[in-house]
Image (cartoon, rainbow, N blue to C red; front, side):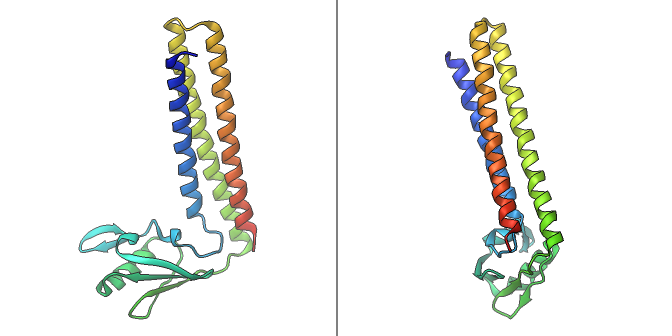
Length: 187
């Protein structure tokens, strides 16, 4: 195998790993009925006039499976954090006790669970599309090497290896989505 072909494999694997990592991040946002601090990671707070991630202005913890507490580092921004949580369209109504915000995570209905499974599967499909696009790019690079004189056998072997790598990453996507579906449907 030539050095150029190895570089194509390495870049292809790296791109697929990024697609997988993105999928894991997106699946964390799909809540499975259990309270987790990552549920609030997309919340932005107006902090002295600039939008700031909530994790940079407060501690977020989960004292139990149905509750999230948000303790700001400055009590003066408690209302701004509450406003940010409400505006983030996560469906949470934070309770302000003057010290911390307490968010009760409601249990999921069967219908809502099915919707969340659909969303998880859609994220999985996006990841698969990304992996297939990466495969197309890698195959195009191999074709360019063929034009530059790479042997026919090396081209065939490279195409087979790229498909093999694609299959491995598609399986990883399916495994992640299946695990998330099981997590969502478990009451």
